[in-house]
Length: 309
View 1 (cartoon, rainbow, N blue to C red):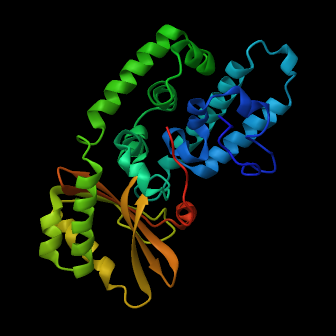
View 2 (cartoon, one colour):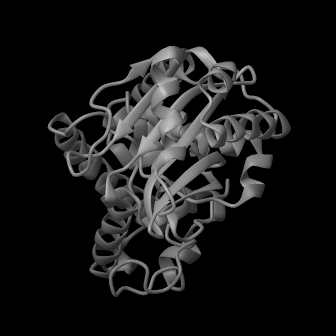
View 3 (cartoon, rainbow, N blue to C red):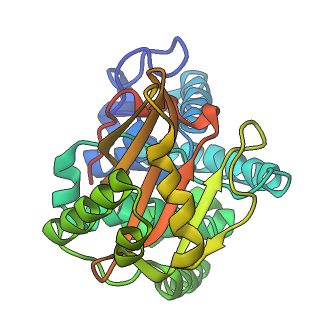
């Protein structure tokens, strides 16, 4: 789980070049690697804290007394993540307004891998937020990173039979709530381009033509900056709000980008990121809009984050 990281990313510890990274294959690096943090924790800062704690615990262990070092590393990393997930769950109960995952600037080629893009999308991360901490950990470790039930059971201190039941419930939960059928990268780009043209025009009818009738807009200001305080539902209600993006004047620029594996817009005011607007595309129309405005969540948008299976 540490092998992906560049030296110095986690506190002052040099990770990714020592024994922990060598113990795990690339697929097992993902659950807490910075490129994949959202699948399990939803925040790069929280992932870094967990990795730091894992490293410190690893460094303090007599490895000669550890029978299976790889299993031990998976166990301490997963348990630290569960502790953090439970803390985050309590924090979110008092969060001001809707909570959205931290947006990540990703390479355009991530969108070409439909399954990968779906797994890191804003919509999918919001679905994962509806799982309890243990369910989320089991689902991600099993479904995304293909760990064996026995290995997950040891990591979360439950029986393999219990893990199978938790995994089954989590799969059913996610399947019932996950975004509608995936669209091809070309279809997604075409729908986004039409949306971008409509936003640039500021024309309400053009926006109504590209928004799904039941489109939902979520805004996350975290109580720090102004954002819609509750979900806005319906094209007629969402269109006027989105049309306002093109009316900020000469100090504003609107950029197309890829956020969490999907096309998105980045609004800058005087050169600084003001809003990241991620989109969900359903049947060729914009079905979901996720406006992240909380400044604490925008630091990862200035630099591309590597995402891999």
